[in-house]
Amino acid sequence: MTTEPSPRSPSGTREPSPPEDSTGTRAQRSPGDSGRLREARPTGHSPGPGTTPPPVLQVAGLRVRYGLGRRRRTALDGVSLDVARGETVGVIGETGSGKSTLARAILGLVRADAGTIAIGGEDVGGHNRRRWRALRRRGVVQYVFQDPLRSLDPDLTIEDSLTEPLLVQGVPRQEAAARARTFLDRVRLTEELLGRLPGELSGGQRQRVAVARALVTEPRLVILDEPVSALDSANRVQILEILKELRSDGVALVFISHDLGSVAGIADRIAVLHQGELVETGTARDVIQRPRHPYTRLLVSSAPTLHGAPAERAERAALRALLHV
Ligand SMILES: Nc1ncnc2c1ncn2[C@@H]1O[C@H](COP(=O)(O)OP(=O)(O)OP(=O)(O)O)[C@@H](O)[C@H]1O
Image (cartoon, rainbow, N blue to C red; front, side, top):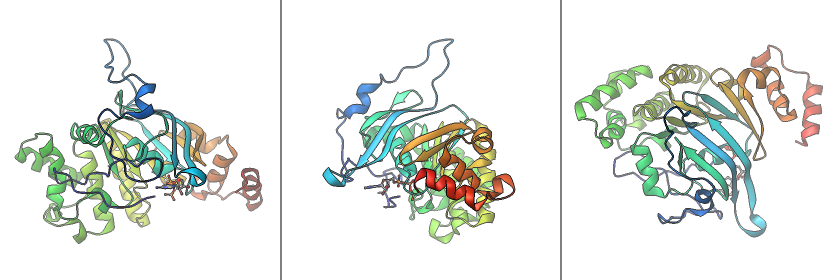
């Protein structure tokens, strides 16, 4: 995935870059330039009394293409996914399957060619940078990337990284500082780190701070793109445990990973991406115990920790042949 750093926002937190257009170059959209996404779905409906609230995240028929002419390639095609309040959905797939593109599209960092994305019932497909910032300020959606330095401003102390999103929301300084300490404790870090810069922490500590920063505003939705992939196994296990504890607060998580083993223990549902298409979605139990698509069967059979013994080499070879991989 692309790992370019993002410019610093006026609030001092890292601000994701503006969306890319279909050629892969950065594009600024005017407020009126909603493209095809806005046309496809009415926006901003609040549920009436007695009606079920909409899913926190609704992705429907999403298509993202990169490049132009002969270099044009489809990264996502017809992807539809709903995530309910408090639900954790794991999105798995091998390298190049489109996982990061999905994360970037949901966060408004890449422009969709077709389809709709709604967060908390609000169509965000046509949002420009300013409206995205407003959405984050309202504490609706947050993110954690594989490299915590993409989520944290290297020039801000840990305390400032944790308090800034709260101060921007108008939380009084003293309360913000108290909440920062609470979240630091919840990600199992000590207060002595508050005065340090991200560069003065270990990779595992940095990722915990990134998780705390994403959750400190108690958002409705957090997108986690390979949050544990760069960590050693001890840190990986601890961050997964922390996420499991924190999700009980009702936050919806989209947990993106190439590793079924990482996702299996935390996800309520699992969605499987293969060559830009969602080939299977189901409860974590069903996907792992009764995988239907050959690609899912290959993923499950290649993850020995899920079922005791690794599948026979011959079975995996047969599945690969079926998938032409
Ligand atoms: N900015 C870009 N310009 C052109 N093609 C891109 C761009 N970003 C991604 N792609 C292509 O889109 C496809 C999906 O990429 P994406 O990064 O979403 O995959 P991924 O599943 O996240 O892979 P990984 O696990 O390696 O990060 C790949 O074929 C990739 O080469």
